[in-house]
Image (tube, rainbow, N blue to C red; front, side, top):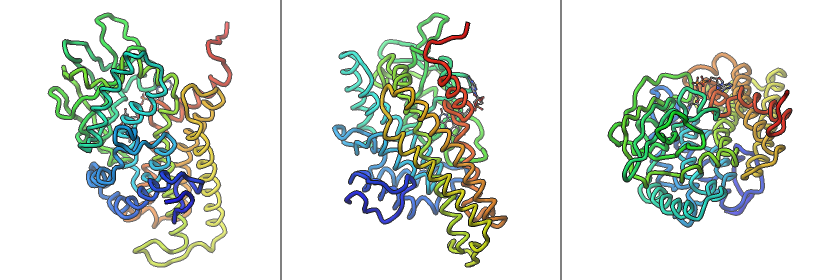
Length: 417
Ligand SMILES: Cc1cc2nc3c(=O)[nH]c(=O)nc-3n(C[C@H](O)[C@H](O)[C@H](O)COP(=O)(O)OP(=O)(O)OC[C@H]3O[C@@H](n4cnc5c(N)ncnc54)[C@H](O)[C@@H]3O)c2cc1C
C-alpha cells in the first residue's frame, strides 16, 4: 500500500508513512477493529490473558515485527514499532502492553544491539545466540515476556537486580523473584534481567545479564493473585526462580551489553508509551461517537449540541495532538547516545503520553456522563487502563520529573560543594 493511502487515521495521526509502515498500520488497525476490540471486555472482566489475540498476532507475522529481515522477520525499526504498538493499544490496552514486552525481547537483541559497541568476539557470540532466539519467534511463534521489576530500586535503574545468575559448567543458575511479570503463565520464554553472582558481596549494575528462561524450566513458578484495577489482561503475577538452570545459549545479550544499552539507548524505555497513546486515542474516539449518538447498540441520543461538551472535546483533541506531536518527534529522533536536548525531550514525551492518557480518559468520562461509565461500554476500562502507564518503571511520572529536573540543572559529573 503506498504511503498516505490509509483509509483511517492512525493513533499516531496522519503522516507520510513508508509503504511498510502503511501496510503494518493497516494490518494492526484491521486486527484491532475486527478482532481485539470485541474481545477486550472479556480479558478485562476475567483478568485473563488474551491468547486469541496472540494467535492472530502470530498468524499475521506481527510477533516477528522487530526481528531483522535477515532472520526472517518484518525488520521494523523503532519508530515503526511505536506506530504499530499505538494502533494495537487503541483496541486493547492489555494486548498492546504485553506485546510491547514481547517486542522488546526482539528489538533489544535486534536493532538496539546493532547500535551498541561490542568486541568482535561478543558480536559473533551474539549473532549465533540471537539466531536461535529469532528462529523461535519466526518459526515457532514463541512469545517472550520481560520481567524486570523486583519491588526494589533495581527497576528504577538505581541498583543492581536482586535476581542473580551464577555461572556453572555449560550455563547459568538463576535465583530470585520478579514482580508484575506481564504474560506470566502465558509466555514461552521470560527474558530475565539479573545480576551475575561473582561470589563476592558487591553486586554491580555493570554485571547485569539478560537471560531467557523457558516457561517450563524446572524451578520456575508463577505465584500470587492478579486482581488489579487496570490492564487486567496483562496477567502480571510474580515469578519465583529457585535454582533454575539454563544453558549458555539462553543468554540474550553478551556480558555487560545490557548495562551499556541502558546507558546509551534511553529510548529503549520509551516503548511503554505507544500502548497509552492508543488508549488515549480510544477514549477520544469513543467520546466523539458517544456525543454524536453513534455508539453501536446504544440509543441514538445526541449530546453534541451542548457548548460545554464541545469545549471538552476540543480540549481532548488539543491534548491528543500535543501528545502525538511530541511522540512523533521522539520516535524519529531515537538513537544511541542522544544529545542532552533529545534525552530531555524523550522524558518529556513519555511523561506527556502517560499522564495525558489518563487526563483524556478522565475528561472523556466527565463529558460523556454517568451512563458512559457503565461496564457494557469501554470507557471505564480505558480510564482504569490509562491510570497504569505513569506507574511503570523505570520511567514513572515521578522518576521522570526527578530525572528531568536534575539533568537540566546539572551537567554530567557536576556536584555541589
Ligand atoms: C499493568 C502493569 C504491567 C506491568 N508489567 C510489567 C512487566 O511485564 N515487567 C516488569 O518488569 N514490570 C512490569 N510492571 C511493573 C512496573 O514497571 C513497576 O515496576 C511497578 O508498577 C512498580 O510498582 P511498585 O509499587 O513496586 O513501585 P516502587 O518501586 O515501590 O515505587 C513506587 C513509586 O516510587 C517512585 N520511586 C521508585 N523508586 C524510586 C527512586 N529510586 N527514586 C525516586 N522515586 C522512586 C516511583 O515513582 C514509583 O512509581 C507492570 C506494572 C503494571 C501496572
